[in-house]
Image (cartoon, rainbow, N blue to C red; front, side):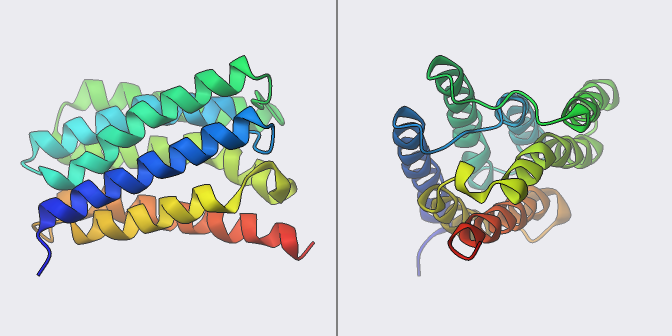
Length: 191
């Protein structure tokens, strides 16, 4: 039987592989990341990982720490390559603002369970611009990146040591989000 630690490391490895592919896609201008989403994710995943660790989660938080670093690199490189999407509408800034509110609530509440809920909500608010952008233009994303994210999400779920809300919530949310993006990206071959 594979240990929880191995699944945590595999989850992080798939995040890293997806990030490398995404950076290659950005370099060749095949992917157009939504910069506000990626910047927001870099902050909120760091807070989510901190909340999980404060509540005792260990290896399941590895995927969030890997995501933190990778999201920041993607945002910066997409700006550098001039392919990053800053905004597709006013709703992006509203959603980003709601994500910031989630960030502020995490700092104000300073309770692991509420911090985790705020982190997930903020992550979703940061991510909705990417979902909207990808729904409108599936070709702005590439499938290998999101396939790696889905596999990472499965490994992250298998890394959960205790089936408690505090340890399972964020990896489960990430799996659902990444699966949604993967489905949207796969639409580009059907449109």
